[in-house]
Image (cartoon, rainbow, N blue to C red):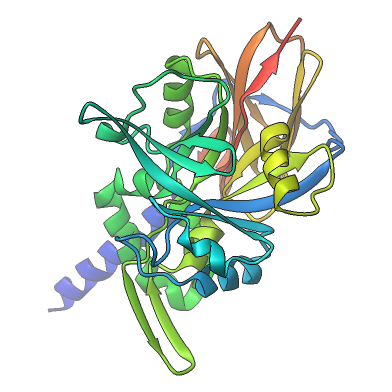
Length: 346
């Protein structure tokens, strides 16, 4: 009996260590950067995208739950895209935008999935089998590089173990546990697939949030999954060249600004100046990877950096944080951000 208890305790300990300290990354080729980079000028706004409510056939969430979660987490805008309908618009406030998610069919064959928000057209679910985009790769399209729901469900076994461990650690870590789930998202694979396929569209992160269980009583409500969980796990930041005063301004900012997919409520910045690409993170324990259109990579350890004298072409920067490092060995590596597609010209 004692041996069984000890074995079970050891198993739980190993599970917790795996949850906290993995994955482990060896950054043997990374250079060290201790330079100071001033953030760029502009106006910064946060938003969440690709949300479903009760107006979708497969979701139960209410409009007021989206608004409440947005406000509690300090997010500037939320974009709801229910399936084939924008009926939610009659419940929208000044910071809730409403679009539609539509499937594009040609002669009975699915050719792609789009989020339509105003005049913006966002390619969604491209990395999910049958939803793969099979039409022209128009540069005016926006590309959903990270679909949170798809990315998590790609690793169902790890997700199950994460959920189990989170239940054990919840009394100690509370809602901070949510951020750890970003470790299940392979942002490097998404970026490399996007570049290798020749996409040259702007990129965003979409939640694809569906509420599957909804219980509401007087002064109580329970949602699974809850909007606030996915809103806390991933959001976008848009660096706009002008101040945003209303929804029309915000849609224009999405067209003209620089986007950043973030797995933290603290913004990072990535921008281009001439033939330089600069990046700034709010965390000292940051590891960054620059990926070029020909899939060459450059790695840096540091919270501020500048990649200079870059050749003409397209680039994406990935940011990560880690719990601690031993030499070049990084423990508990977690995605921090994915930059927009940046073009360097002569």
